[in-house]
Amino acid sequence: MGKQLFRSSPPPEKQPAHQSLAESAVQECTSSINTVISKWTSSSSNEFLFSTNSRHEAEEFVEAVKHLQSTMHRLVSVNASSDKLVYAHNLMQSAMKLLESEFRRVLNANRDYLDPESVSVRSSYRSSRFSTSTTTSVSDSEDETSYDENPNDHRFSGQDSDAMDDLKTIADCMISTGYAKECVTVYKTLAVRSLFFGERLLADHVFSSSVNIVESSFTDITQEGALTLFAFPENAAKIKKLSPEKMFRFLDMYETLASLYVEIETIFYFDSAAAVRSQVISSLARLGDAARTMMTAFETAIQKDTSRTPVIGGGVHQLTRYVMNYLSFLVDYSESIAVIFENWQPTLPSSSSCGGDDAYPEELYSSPVSVRIAWVILLTLCKIDGKAQPYKDVALSYLFLANNLQYVVVKVRTSNVKLLLGEDWVVRQEGKVKQYADKFEKLAWGKVLTSLPEYPAEEITPEEAKELLVRFDDEFEASYRKQISWVIPDPKLRDWIKVSLSHKLMLVCTELYEINRFGSGGDGFNVRYTSEDIGNYLSDLYFGSRGSGSGSVSTKGSGSGTGTGSSSTGKSRGGRSH
Picture 1 (cartoon, rainbow, N blue to C red):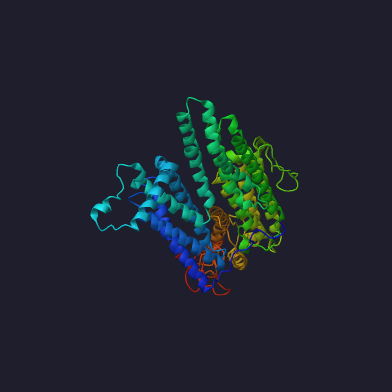
Picture 2: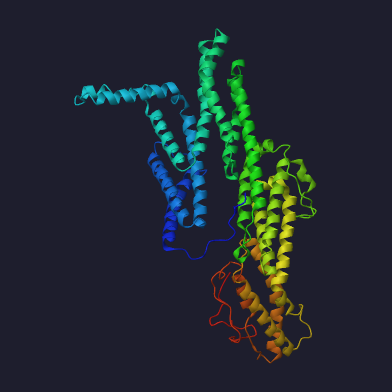
């Protein structure tokens, strides 16, 4: 793919007014939907969303989901990179999982009332009743009651009527929001376990005196429909343009069909039904081929990504986010991809090309999936290495590398990817993050650190202490100003770097302040940055833009504090807490 697939820079800070309105609309929708999802997905809930007591709330939820979809479309048109859009998309997926779960539950709970005969009779009854009511007067109460449903007849009970309405409501919502395949997948599983299985039981019972009649009647009735149903995945897999984003829907079909294969073999065990069994095997094979094709396309897209624009502030590149989110979803299908990727390994580059000698630990070769995942991550990190080159400041390039590798490590550690790569892999990568962070600290703060003597500062006169503090003030101010727009998104890494810097700066600075102050009879010169100021300014760094919003750095000569006194800015920063 020649075109750029991954966004390389965040959206601009200022947004147009109509964009804010779109984001507000999405936020309002997500707030209302999140409340319902939290209620109905909590483990303490013993009720169901689509039930007699909550049907009104279910209808409101469906309408809220549809409204969220429309507002998301609106927001996409004005700001496709909005953080609120990402949150809304994740919430939409949670809503769909809830609806999918309810769809499956309603089907299973009402299986006895949703067989073809009952549905057909009920539909005919409703049609005939409507037709009669349009030509017959119902003013007479006796005539009116003659059309009442028999409460003892399960064919016309409120339970199955509500179930049909609920299923239609859920299906309409999922289809309108782009989740039709997920809905159909659940419905097919009813098809196999209810319709075909029920037809087999009926044929076995009615024609129990003749096995040949059982086979011929069952095959004649079900084979055409079964072949059409089970051929759908194969036909879908024949699509010429299989983008990587379609992977998960194909894996859903693969898992569903694979989980039903034993039951399909049991139901269609006759010789005359061999075509049905063959079709299922063929569909599974084509779905596996499609998955491998999409995985190859995914890897190719990474290799061909040519974005060179540096990420502002050295933050996490969109390529890193995309790849790790993709892999996190992919490994949730561990059983399926273990079969699909079996005996299918990538052509691994030499260790010297990227990643070092430990790029492919020997233990990973025990699992083809592990090798594949490790290879994709290595490929991504190699691309990230290249994207660090455009940074003019070498320190910022190392910060960029540290941020991206830390994102990878956190994603692996907090997902099922860790089960494939193992703890040792994670520990090795954490060591590399520390190496990047150490190089960043040395380059970004080297002049500041070398402006101070080693601790403890022995045999330093008050005059020497004064000169050292003046030099330190200049270097600290220059480093702070340069890094105010730099970012470390991961809180753990951000705190680690700040604690390391604070430890190296505070002790020596405090000692120099004391030497200068008390060596001058308590009348030392005005310093711009006291120990307390240093801590506050460090706390302000690496949030991007203007830090955490606590103010700007002082200017030369504006100091008013002495020794360990107040800050040199117009207002004291000593009262801030972090």
